[in-house]
Length: 288
Image 1 (cartoon, one colour):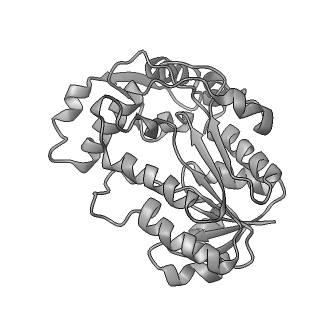
Image 2: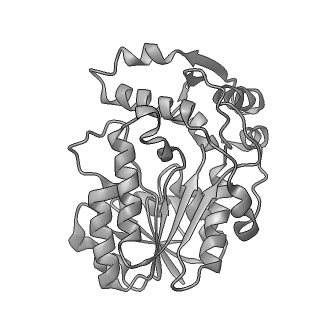
């Protein structure tokens, strides 16, 4: 089975792609920057494709049984911009039908469920809900994954030099998951997928912890350099909300992460895809 991957070079796309390659799948990476993707994945086939250029997609997908999508809304993106998860997804789904793709696998999010809770209404989450609806209405088989917080974000979007930023204060306890564990579950899901049977899985880690506790555990166990945790009041970020799209994104995602009442649901996932066992301290100790 050949799997086409869009978004392979991203923070969450890379570990999934590596896991699928290690599992023995034939992987074809569809990328706008072919040379850069080939440097990351010399063992994979890399072809050009751009979700903004629908004419590039049918040939890129030809011969693939599955396409895996690791898409996102950029922090600097505006509501009126081209969105890969809706505009690009429409192009992809149309091309997939032409190319004979049988299944679409898609990385979603568990926290997007916060939309409409407590009056919360954010255009980014509307896009993510619309993406799921588009896939389900496509007529293709699908595998949709709803992960909790990724541990990797603490070393990327939350990190500023030696600081790990925690915005706001909350007793909510997400079930943090590592992208590597998630990649293994994706590989297993595609291995057991049957024609005509959709898949939807909540992806969660081994234990629930608050955002602050997660950052503190990461900082203590990280070995490559010294990290410190800095708590930032949400009100401070609101000052830049009107003038900065990135600050507006930060305010909304922080509110959702601090408020969504995540419950443990992976007991229905683990029997199918395997139990996740990597805790935050072990992830941090091995992180680059």
